[in-house]
Image 1 (cartoon, rainbow, N blue to C red):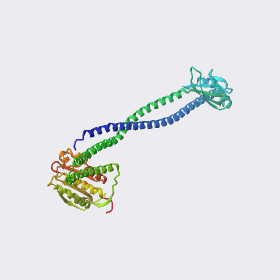
Image 2 (image 1 turned 90 degrees about the horizontal axis):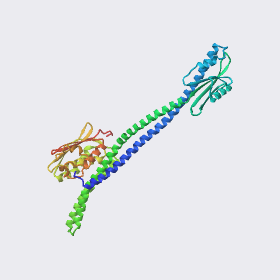
Image 3 (image 1 turned 135 degrees about the vertical axis):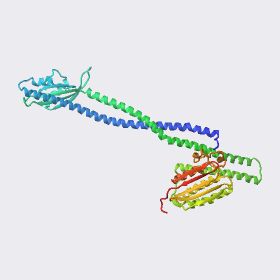
Image 4 (image 1 turned 60 degrees about the vertical axis):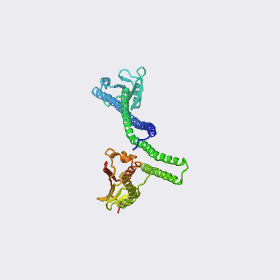
Length: 446
């Protein structure tokens, strides 16, 4: 392909930063959505988890206080059973009982403190209420400053069968234990959440980049497509304008005007061909070109295309031969299939020097239709071979001089792909090129 003018490169360069900036913003937005969504999930999960664990911790604290009062009750039962006549037996039992992290109290049936010597007002009030109600009392309170602490109180009234006496056992726990555990849980979860969000942000950025890669490739392809299309149309439009201007510069005889109009028509036809090819590819990219599926015979379509291509071959002095010709059923769009065969034949004739030969083979291989077009033209170099299906690519100067916009094989590839067919191209520079299209097995009833 010819080098693009500087204006095309400048326009392409101007489009690139804008597209890259939009993609960067899109990537940031996608990453923000990933992180925001995950943060919301973590928040809802954490809130639910904290509520469940807080409830569980409070229940464990209540259970531990009940177990402590039962320990006081059991110790009192045992001691009074051993020494019924000793009034201080229960007091001694409670005084000797120790439960880590719990303060134990014993009150008589009137709510008077027996063990230890003093108790907070709230503890005494809970014991009095339990003594009057003959039941259990649960409450909590805050101590006075400067030792402001939240305390949980459980008071339980019980009777000793051996002596008949009624007592109230009270167990007190500092709620700071619960709060410390809760704070430790929050700190652990918060640290894990921050680490998870950082990982999600990194992973989101990576995934957003991967998701944006097809968009980047599409935008790059669009920019290249637009620049190539502008470049291809620039030459025939310039020639068209120049011929019209020259024809109008001075008075001419009718024959000269006819010649000028004929040249204008040639250039207009070239422009029309490029526009038609561009429109075909644009519709293919947008999925707006429906592909019909009907059972037909590849040999019939190929024979019809050969008759159309023979005129071009004769004009260029190229021999067009149908060599192998078998009946081959395929499922295809008849219009697109004919266009595919015409593109391959036109391409082969165009790049074959006068006196050369183009051959067409149609055969059935295990029920699969196979089409092969071979020429004795200029061939394609090994470096250019992987790029021949790229849009606007025309390779070396020998192929570029043959004319055309370099869209034919791109359209051929699209038609083959639309029919789930495989198109292969082999070539040797200076010897010739062979294009083979293998169609899948037809499924419709013939």
